[in-house]
Amino acid sequence: MSIWIVDFGSQYTQLITRKMRELGYASEIITLDDAIERFQKNLKPSALVLSGGPQSVFEDKTDYTIFFKDSSLPILGVCYGMQIMGQFFGGVVEKGVVGEYGPAKVHSLNDFNIEGCPATHDVWMSHSDHVSKLPVGFTKVLESENGLCAAIVHESKPILGLQFHPEVQHTVHGSDILRHFLVKIAKLQSDWNGDAMIKSCLDVVSRARGKKVLCAFSGGVDSLVAAMLSHQVLGNDLFCFFVDNGLLRPQDLHHIKLLKEKTPLKIEIIDAKNIFLTNLKDVADPEEKRKIIGRTFIEVFEEKVKSYALDHDIHFDFLLQGTLYPDVIESLSPHKKGGKSSTIKSHHNVGGLPERMKLQLLEPLRFLFKDEVRAMGEELGLLRDWVWRHPFPGPGIGVRVLGKVDEASVQKVQQSDQILFEELKLSQLYQSTWQAFTVLLPVKTVGVKGDGRVYEEVIALRMVNSQDGMTATVTEMPWRVLEKISVRICNEVKGVTRVVYDLTPKPPGTIEWE
Ligand code: XMP
Image (cartoon, rainbow, N blue to C red):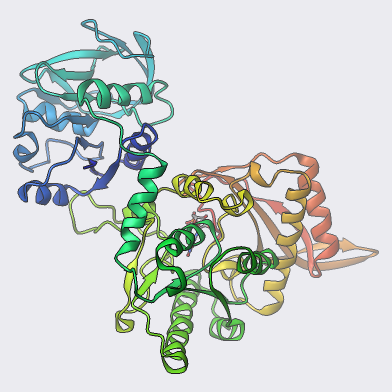
């Protein structure tokens, strides 16, 4: 049984799940419609969390009775979630004259005490409406500097409401507050650790035992951990196909060859360079390029699957994918209330192969965050270098040559990326950034090389720190390292005379340039 976190659309909802898992409690995000449906089917969580959200209770016509029927169910309301509770239990929610946004201080009332947390502490607020009259049966336990109600607890039921966001880093004692809810109010036993994680993933794989399973293998940490874990159940029935789309960096092919040699996985490298470059010819639009690359992957896989059936009488039943939880959350149905809708870029490797291939999806990591997958990789005994590799997108260099893609441009990115990689490794800074790569810009600038004027292309360096790619900050690289990379690229990569460093965090910029 896990904790259900009902997503009302706050940008921080994922963080609640992460924090709860870090504290050792299984939790998942669900839409409001799914939560109501599950309650109607008499399914029950170990605790219910109502997240924050951009709406206002004045416009919300939902009947929440089903959530509050069972008086023993532990419930945590965060921000908007607290206002829903406040209104349901007969309190008054008022539109704020001034909102509280950003850092704030709150102090305890009525002897409210949280282990590890002082009586006055810093929190992160993001609201304009607030609970102005206490709901029936509740006590105010935290108040903000502005005198607004910041937290309420029920006198006899296991219910806590927080007007601020305990999941956000700026709420200094956020983990203590969540632990207080889980341990003292909900009285739950911790149930999420390395063993539980591996067991839940192996359970997923066990439905494919004895069947033939195809893995779209990229060699990145997700597909590697998914494959290694599945191999424990599937053995020789697992076939890993790695597509060489011609849009890879030299280190990627080297890595795959190493995995082929050092792991028990059956990995086949499919050379599809020409098909990809031909299909991409003269296409400049980023979305169009992504779609073509995605489609071509599917064509290549379909051909391979057919040839296995014809030549080896091997028929695949399942497709193993390293899909992670953030992708699952992103794709929660936009038609369901509380589901997320924005697709910023089409990620080709989410969604899988066409139905006509009649492959069932096997996604053992679909409930895990990247840091959990890495922890599991280490627990499975994989080398640190493999587990901590930088992410590399499925469309590869195809989205790092801006505009039209041809072999010469791909080579410029391959060479500059290799220089970046070598220098980061040499200066032992590879692990100090989450992802580092180079991009070829579709502009030419004037320069001087030797005694002559040149008119040549520009390479951008992109290095970011992030936890899961959802948000990112720019990595602070030592100047001498940046300078050396720049000098080497201008000297060694033919046709490039200028190197720039991208200083844009995400948001507003995405990590990839296309
Ligand atoms: P963006 O550019 O959306 O990227 O900020 C976030 C993270 O996702 C990676 N990325 C992809 N990964 N297939 C992938 O497997 C894709 O189509 C794709 N597009 C972006 C990106 O490298 C970054 O780590």
